[in-house]
Amino acid sequence: MTTMRIVTAHGVVALALSVTACSSASRPVSPTSVTGVSEGNDAGQATTSAQPDFAVAAKPGNLTIVGIVLQDDGEFDVLQAAVVRAGLVDALNGTAQYTVFAPTDLAFVTTLGVASEAAAIDAVNTMPVETLTDILLFHVTHGRRTSQSVLAAPSYQMLNGAKLPGQQLAAAGFAATDISASNGIVHVINAVLLPGR
Image (tube, one colour):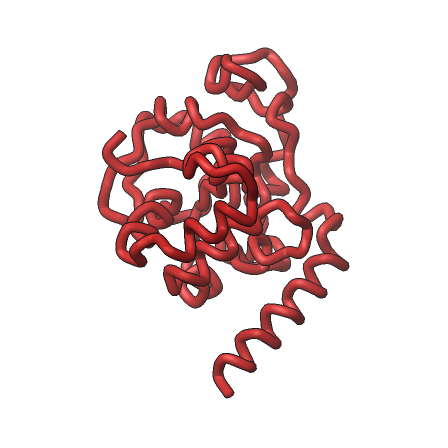
């Protein structure tokens, strides 16, 4: 019965997200519009492009972090599988404020050294839960941190207990920033962050 409610809730959230995905409250910011973020191999280098609307990102959005990740948009399919397998849905669906660095599906495919998104999902589903949880919690820090705040910090204390150096995050590269959730902010990154590297 509980599993059925969770599956139903995920379906409702996915439907609601597909309807509201284009709202201005949760719109991503182009990585080239954020000072300090540029495309390609120069990720993390200062740029002179226009500042994004940080006030929009600072306001809570309509969806939770889990709601954003569970959108049926093909963007976070591997991350969805990982969050569910690690048992982090409830933690990222609550009211505590977090900043999440969400790897793209391609980031998981590359990191896991597999040929496809389906193979990455299979790899995530066979990974030891403790290892997977440690990796995922290395992508989450306390508080609502806009891209301006993220880029200014030299390191971050992550929920797995480790420190994430700013250089490691910058090297990952940003695909989108300042996606506002009701319980935090999501920044989409182009690499999976691994603790201890």
